Length: 257
Image (cartoon, rainbow, N blue to C red):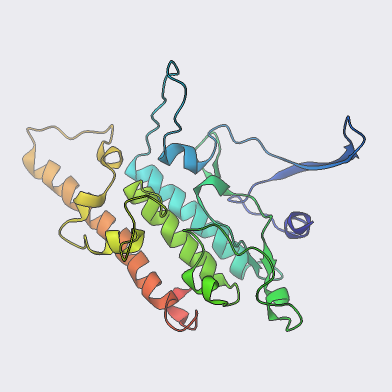
């Protein structure tokens, strides 16, 4: 019902498109309700970032995103969240932004989906609604303030978006076993700024099909410098967002998308 309410009046190229709905009875006589979405041939971003272990004889398909595709997907997701927060009749909070909820069409354009945990800004502002009601997102992607009882907010979606960006750059989940104690995905990325950025970047991201001839050293060096500058910008931007979000329970205005 939350999805129906959210999807009723929203239209954006970077949100999943609903085709129809179904309300019927299943073969056991139980109520059956479903939403039918536009098919996304390239699946979820999750499948492009992380391998799924198959059987012993099953061939593993290693998918590859170029740096340009990664940036494009990041812009698509940001556009969708900006639309939900600032251009709807009533601000909408997604509350569960993560790679498995970002779907890719045939042209690798990203579409944000799964509005099962969506919240409306007006509902959050209603004092009759307890701050402890409902799930606040997925571990690793939900803002840390939510664990302290803070209300969900647009800044929480921005936090989740930042984690998603870092995951695309490093190809490491925020719940990776390497992150324990004081080490988390944010600190892992931040400590590499600016000189060791290549140490944390996913190598597949740098293996672009468009190689520059090794004989043209100056052109190759310029290209490498541009790539490094771009990666530093991505990680540094998220660092600023993170520092703003963790300042007194989302009271910092620097976190706007």
